[in-house]
Image (cartoon, rainbow, N blue to C red; front, side):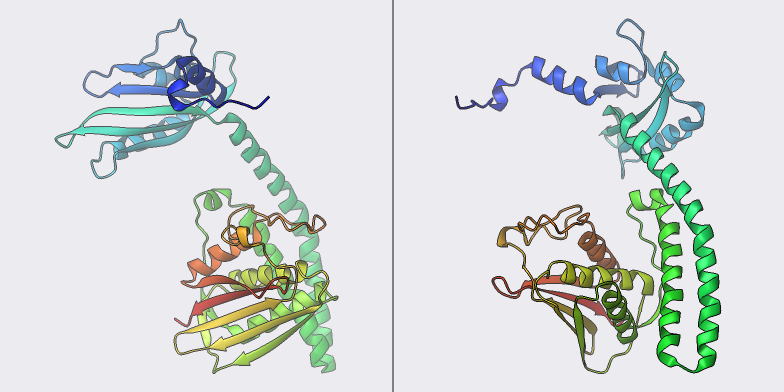
Length: 358
């Protein structure tokens, strides 16, 4: 039996009530002149009140934990600004059973002759989401604490090893020890970044800019990639008079590492990766070309989406689907761009990373 479809005009109030209850979404309207507050039952439930309880503006304020009430005050100041007019904040409320719930409050101010008259909005119970975020932060804190002690010991031993090798005059092994030391610094920064969930949620990727020698950086990324993936060979060609650019060396290295690791990962049957570094008067371009399985036509516009992984029939290829998303963010914040080309049917992919010289 084939399924029939409900048209929008056939969706009843009963459907709406069930849907709003399931997602715990409440609606409210606040008359700023009279302070009268009208709302749905779900809105009262979100604040910890029952259907029989009276519900006023004072009830809302009383339900919010004292330490979170300032968020509401700050949000209200913005909502009264005709150039902003948005009422938005998260807060904790205490229910009758003494359990704490997180609410996301959102609203829009209605103005009349530039005078705020009403605010119409919603309340959404986001307790489960917040609990997961808190658990994640606790795990990250524990992991950070437990990892930093042995990492400091590893760095100390590597410093001793680097000084010893330097005295031998063997530049090759001295370079290996130096890169190992740099790797510990990268791990330390990665751990520190992981402990800043507020910055990540606010989409604030802090760049620590300095002069970056792109040739040295690309050579370092290639060497590290080949060290980890010894089944593949990565060849570099350089064209043009390369100069230093201004950027975050760690973040740029992270972006290039993601691209090269992807090239290796999606070339299980081919061991060759070609990297080209080209300079013009205005920018520097890094091209990474592999000879692997390629990307299906219908998925090329999705590869930079967060958590998206291509469906290519190679289930054994693991990953989180976040590498290219992070890469595109890093490059964009440096004023550059990353572009994808299909090298040909079944003949691999080409990624071009272009960064401005200034």
